[in-house]
Length: 312
Ligand code: NDP
Image (cartoon, rainbow, N blue to C red):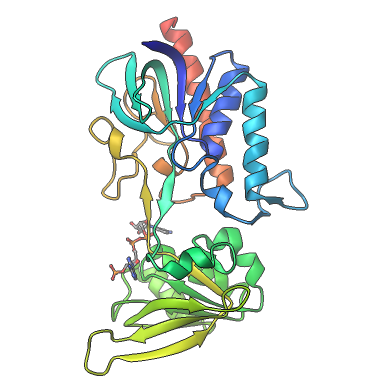
């Protein structure tokens, strides 16, 4: 069985940054790209808030740069997906979908999270053309425009409030007759004159020639007074939750009720010696490329110290 000193699972900003640091520390990192090589940023258009790019950078280009930087310091990058983990004892065993199993002294779990979508065909059709699952990433493109946000939780309220600072009008599409978000977030939404909450509404589809121009809505679906109508909007934001990609690690590491890996304090330590979690898989709060990169850096530094301590 192949023995790896530093195994990194995931190829978003957390995984690549861990690889850059681990490579420069001579840990001979091996990185597995996973389901979506390059991570969530490869489905974003322009990234304007990653420091160092004054003119902005296309999401896929940023990830290509990070990949090259990781390779420059000797990271071996492979295409398989991790399907099984055995973290019962060191060296830890990880099995991939190409039927290989490797053993590793240290593991950086950087498998990310996946934004949930409603499952409408039109979400795919208009991907990058008006449909987004990240207001902080894409909100800037909707200055003085009209947008809709779907969801009634904290994320939806936070995104709607953020977007109201940029857009001229924000519709919050909520399927229930109430918001699930915390009281303070609800108040912020209700008090914002730019936000209009559409309770008991569901989105059924989108329309537009060269991008989103509006959403097909249904009010009080399944009730006697069910009503269908079209709402003109320029942007359609999903905020119905994220699913952290932590399933295979759940038997071993602590996760919260949503599945986010719980780390020790501010560190990426999972509680299993030599196993670290970085990026969105362990971050229900910030979910930014730069915060993911920072935690990937921390994970690699921790891995280096662990290996030195154990003389591995
Ligand atoms: P939540 O699971 O809390 O909320 C998801 C929302 O999306 C709910 O309103 C839900 O509706 C709605 N929804 C889900 N599926 C659909 C669907 N198919 N169609 C329409 N609506 C749908 O997710 P969040 O991302 O908002 O929050 C996740 C966690 O992160 C929470 O614990 C939250 O408190 C926390 N968080 C905290 C923040 C903060 O403190 N600043 C900021 C952001 C998140 P329904 O209510 O009907 O189920």
